[in-house]
Amino acid sequence: MPVTETFSLAIKNIWSNKLRTILTMLGIIIGVTAVIVIVGLGTGMTNSVRESFASMGINSMTVSVWGRGTSRNATVDDFYRIVEENPVWLEAASPEIYMNGTVKVATESYNYTNVKGVNEEYLGMKSCRVAQGRGIQYMDIQENKNVCVIGAYLARIAFNGNAVGETIKVGANKFRIVGVLAPKVEQEDMQEGSEDDCVYVPYSTAMRLSAMSIPNSYVVTMTDENYATQAKAALEEGLYAIYNDENAYYVYSMSEQLEVMNETISMVIIVLTLIASISLLVGGIGIMNIMLVSVTERTREIGIRKALGAREGAILLQFVMEAATTSALGGVLGIVMGYILAAAINKIMPLIMEVDSYVTPTIGSVVVAFGISVGIGVFFGYLPARRAARLNPIDALRYD
Image (cartoon, rainbow, N blue to C red; front, side, top):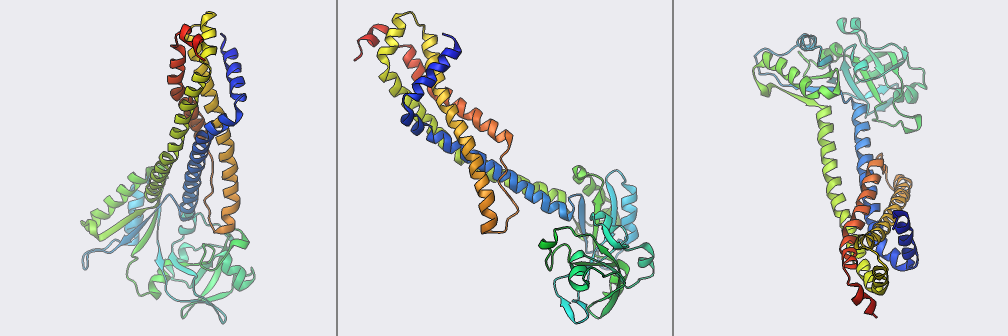
């Protein structure tokens, strides 16, 4: 019997028992739906985490320096030299000095604005674009000037978009605004304390006002985030040559942290997927059970076919095809339900809580889920099919 005719016969038998078939497919439908949604949730969470880290700079490393008391400490020039000696891995470096003090404009105070002392390369390292005026320049650092570049939020709220040339106070110190950064988020999403609520001043000025002799924190960018391990090793080697003590500094790689978080998310998703796959197993057992019932119900039909010359292989193929088709239909319905549920979650979740991660079904998860559903049909349908194929035609014809 041709495969197409066997498939057509399988569809006919399934259609003649619609309710029983749907109930049999429920386990497969639920399992495939759960797998697609869970894997999609993992993909959405991974993308969300990556976007969050991208805003902070995946290709950057933060260095905290404690030094060794009275022994020699790494200077800004030492960091520049380490970068220059490792051009394959390292790209640029900048001090990052956090300044204390409330930002004030006239009589208005901004308590959550981030104020940092940086060098002339920092804005480029952080992918910040100057929309008005200019950025921090080398001469600003050399001459310890009280100038600053502010974020889009502060420029809009405090100066109505016309901030260049105006003055702000950080604590008791006045700074002249020389530049305004382009916004990183949409205007309606800007808020106090966000990335756009910031002030950057020359690091030399920040050190002078904070009574610091050397910076204790740096940001170093790498040439490629895929070389995070090599870049970190090169930086640590350069610092160890200065301090001869691994406890004198700490290098924190955003790329490595992202990798750790992605591995954690993947592990959780794998565990949840395995739990969801239990319903696929239950669905497979249901298919085997219903196929055994079907073999019993159609014993006389099998006997007639064998008496007319049907071979065991043809009988086996017919019942395996019927089980696989039932399971495949369940897989298709599960895929449709998975996409519908994912779309519903993506619509409802933002209304309930502020989340950036969404369920993002992937083609890979769909293909794997469908393949597993068909495989389960074949696997659990083989035993009943084999039983049907081995029936004695005389006994089958006598079956009532």
